[in-house]
Length: 347
Ligand code: TK8
Image (cartoon, rainbow, N blue to C red; front, side, top):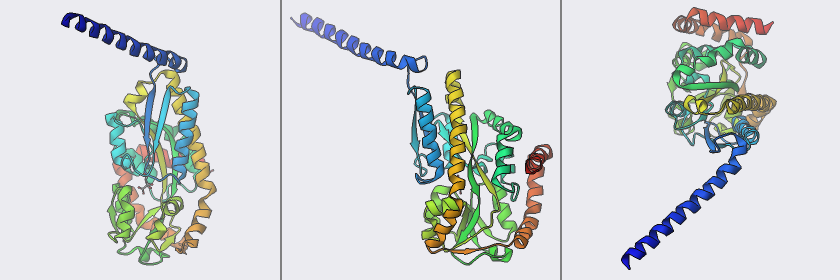
């Protein structure tokens, strides 16, 4: 009797397993028209900014394009506000293969590939159009190749934008006004030294900690594009904003190399094109609203102070030794290549 029961149980288990296997097969079959192996691949994509920022809207565009073009064989989960970490920790997660996509600023990325600091040289890019040409052209694309040795694949450049300074101490109209200000910078030595050269007292910090640091007065101020200052509600904890426009910050769309290598060639093509197309969209959104964000900041009670072209010239002079130092560090050839491309694109 016991034996019969055991046999029946075995038969039942075999049946259950077969049934499960069958339903898996059915899933595989419906998946097989979307890319080969039939297994659905998931991209966990995380960014630092919140869901109101063009960076997140661009990420949703990427999701839409990829899911549509792969017929759902690749699914994109989009996370904002540093839910998966800050720029540095998410980039590390890509290297480890525990996250698939992130879109950091070039400044923290330079901790992985030092050459990227050149794009953060103060006053390098005169305007967005020149930045587009250099980054999307041969030089910028060549930089993306340098990421491979770090287990990262760079698919395109997006835009963070021209950075402008805010603080709660005083209006900044002249270089002297930077004196002694406790400014948060990104985690990048060049940024740190550039602000020291301007007379400020800078502290590097992850973006995810910035709001609280300003709220608690650990820092007096920070610098970011108007979009970030407005959409992240920095006006709640900052009183003054100036058009310092000291650095143009690109974003780099990164994918984990181990994940990318596991895609079919067709899928690699799709994610590459989607990263470019979504980046164009993100840049457009970012530029369209830029002046409006400045008006919105004033409407929220911030004081706007202009830095005159003459004062900006003084800033240029003060940061020159820092640029020279980093040009030496990065390598003259690489830096010259970038400056030549900027000159060419400015014609
Ligand atoms: C968002 C960051 C941020 C950057 C910074 O992840 O840290 O200030 O400008 O926007 O990349």
